[in-house]
Length: 407
Image (tube, rainbow, N blue to C red; front, top):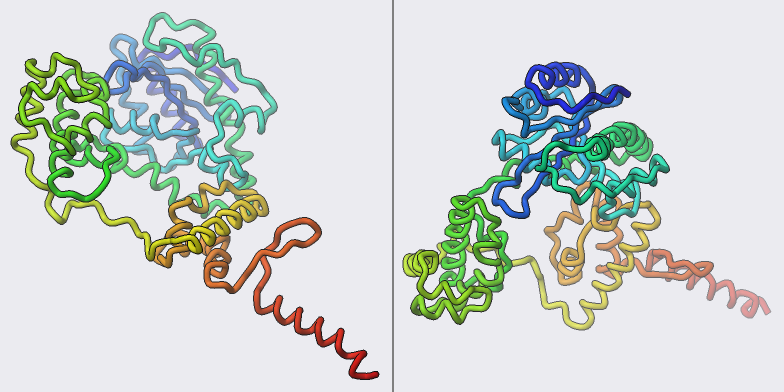
């Protein structure tokens, strides 16, 4: 594989992207800083395939990244490969308003062919290639120039190894017939809606109990206000106000600005500074959330109770057994709250649709409905059909009774 020097000019970048655009896939990774800013500061882009790889300096004077964005967002003939690529995709979206497509994430793919829930890149490389990555340059200031040779070598390794690993993962997916399981997961990763900075829906990221329209109306207004403040000052939203503080203010709004000094998480200065005045104005103008915008009630079915909780525990046990049997990450199949809903009588669930139903949901539903049970055979747990088990027991009893009847 050919490794290029750090690319710092538009012409060299355009030539590289033209060549990569002729291949079947391209591996992508980014280095960025976001600890002190609202928008992630892109500091380096690594890109390559099985033939060549390079690091691109987006901070170089005069460089135009348009050829790179065109390759990632407009060339549908090239599959874009990431590992745990959510933040990388977000950066592309911030620059272009579009996401890379088609897309493939090796961390997600590993969930379909192993029990790895969120395998890290270093572990991925070690498990597939038997190589150990030097993590010394991992926590570095990527915005500082010049970059050292060690930094660049470390960064490019994120795509050179990935270019070797991806075909191996793809081969296993084809062999196991599980590639189709990942289509929805990959489309979800590439959905632009995940990366929109819409201030009107910023409240949905904040954990808040209940569906009180007044509280949620204030939460929505405060969250939108915080996004605007953070963008204007280019600061992380948590530097303006932490989520838990914002939720507390929405639930228990102060009556006057002086009361802000009593709010946990706010400094004493808020009682008479300008940002405190702006916050109080937001609270004053906040309106109750319309019914149409209220979050949906969670699908809970009937209250679980003690018996239902036991059924949910059995479902979780079944999940562990099935994940081990077919070598798949349990998280890809379902989550705890979904199994609790199933135990409570809810049936409109992803676990009962498509491949998940065939692989796990069918047996889970049978367990809930009392059609199957756990049995121990040779020291291992197995699922047993209740009717078949009853038939076997009846036949065994009949066999035992036969000699006595003959006598």
